[in-house]
Image (cartoon, rainbow, N blue to C red; front, side, top):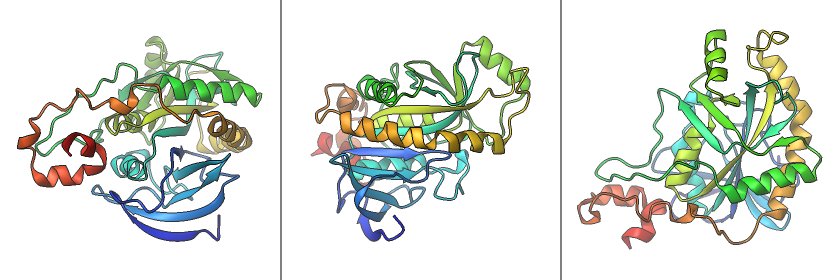
Length: 301
């Protein structure tokens, strides 16, 4: 992708569209196998996304790839412009987002090197904006099932197809970071029966739901956090070593998932705002309507 062309694009009027978005986390900063590749810098009402979006064709489908922490891993979890990242995907007409993330395991039988496709999140972040709605427009989306069941099933099946050990459900507890957990926190998380721990995905999931985009996660287990007696401390170097070992698996699973992804959506994600917009739309400031045009356009036209 070194020779990819760059093209400017406005958030609400994309030049190039993609049906599937892939957000790569720690260890996944590019997407192998893309053809007809180009890079675009998407401008959004919420600022710049983490990096240029790389658009291309993968398994016959148009895909948009974004490095969550930027290539070279330059952005902390709390520094990520989550709203810009999701809005950029929406502006390119992305309907499904596949997230790839590094996580720590809170259970003995969730081993480093294995994948988990979470069906629940628990939010322990403190300093993030996790909604598009404010400035005169209120919305309350349903979030009892925070991931898309259809996309999650595709990801789990793709892992099995590729021979990667996968766990089909579990709870991902999202902490602020960037520090790893204390031993006391790890024990509490285990007592609360959480399965894996990470620093990014719940914020993305909330915004994706508001944007009516399906969202699901491949959680790549890299370590046992700090609770395990044989793994008493977690270091970034250990995590990166495991990530590098799993990078090929992640790429293969993504390619298979994109290939197997249905063309049409039969889930409810695409109508998440149908009964969620509370404010009388006649009272919503014009500037707010304009800023959120890519998200609420079909409800205000």
